[in-house]
Length: 355
Image (tube, rainbow, N blue to C red):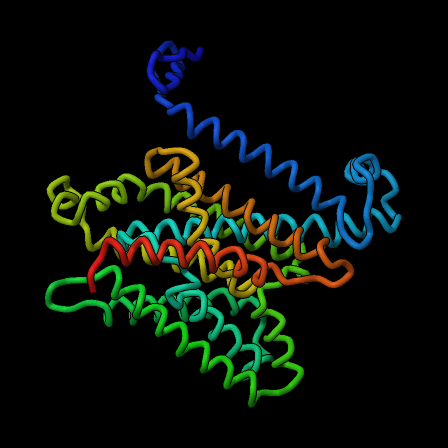
């Protein structure tokens, strides 16, 4: 039985009121609205493209009719897995950005901006060009190791006797990202042409090769990593009030910080290993979720993940239909959207902070 409280909350009482949940209205309504928007975008993604279909035709294919037709091949082998991969990757990158922004207490943190996605990209490009005989199962682990090494380097370089500076963290990350990009470009320049072309297509952040094995791998990793991020939400809320306050509340700040960085790196690395670097998703989604509905850290993470899924799905759909049959990689679309957003955030941060 659900009762509406006079404040902006719903109280849900279950099991003869032995279990009660207090849910804020605005974040819950925003989550429901975003899920409906995702379903609508999924339907549009299945219908639109160089081979357009009507809603009735798509519905017939989903029900199993005309299983051997061209429409069924387009939907089940190309559009459906591609759209699901876009949603999963967007959710993972968005949650990674939210975790990084919480652990650094800086709204400019983003896995692609501070070099974490570039570290994963360098690891995958190295395997593609130098050791192409290795199986694809190695790629996610290599991407995770590359991202973790870069994150540790940035943390170490941005630390001084007075402690860590969030602006210094961002600047070190931007410099590290540029350095890693230069190494990646050298590998592409002097590597085998065919392998370099394959790696270059991957680096553009395109989802056109996504398939059901990618959906399965991303779903498994998300099921593992999302509960870990949500489990750290209370500690993240304490860290937002400062390290001294968090320690006073019984939170082991150092362990929580390392755990958050590891989860954020793993989320970004796995997503990057599948589709390549997608910039600014982890930057835009947490801020958009915060503006959409004020909530606690746990609900904010869920809103952020949903918004990230919507953003990447929309970017992939726009890249497919705007200039069809030419396809624009989703990474380029997110960059076009994200650069002005980043400039605005950086201007605000500079106005509040002195270097």
